Amino acid sequence: MAATETATFGGGCFWCVEAAFEELDGVEDVTSGYAGGHVADPTYEAVCSGDTGHAEVVQVEYDPDVVTYGDLLEVFFTIHDPTQVNRQGPDVGSQYRSIVLYHDEDQRERAEAYVEALDEEYDDAIATEVEPLDTFYRAEEYHQNYFENNPNDAYCTVHAQPKVEKVREAFEANVDPAP
Image (cartoon, rainbow, N blue to C red; front, side, top):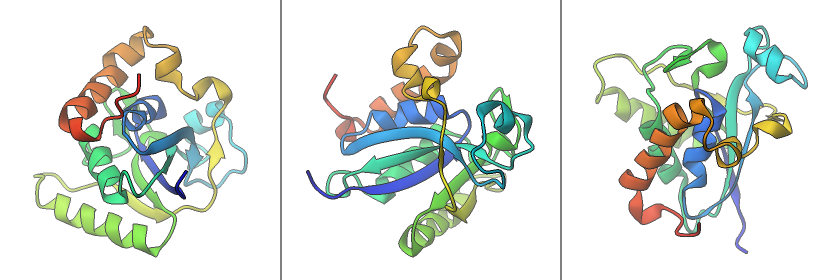
């Protein structure tokens, strides 16, 4: 197995973002969690209160020989609306903000350049934050692989499934053929 790298993104409910990234060939693992706030070891309930400063995020472990960080950025910005401030669709609050948490200077530079280029494509300003990752807190176990484990959940069928289908269609050549 090749050496993997890690990327961290938040763009609304982590169930939806996790499900979309799981589709990609070269993605070894996606973990739902919390980052970008000021409270140690936050719980889901605390993050939902909006008082922790954390966003719902996913950490993507990937093989850079198969899928690049640039590919991940493209997928991320395809599956959510980067112009929405502290929300995505029906989910409202700072925990649902659009955020790229970089792991090194290369990721920072690439994310900032992507956001700058993207800004020219939208009428509204890009709200995506680009910040260094301080600490990632793994979410509770029941949040991991939520879409895969709950495909008939009403929220998943209405919000996660369309993101998965969008990835399958828009990035067909990069979709993992494994069931």
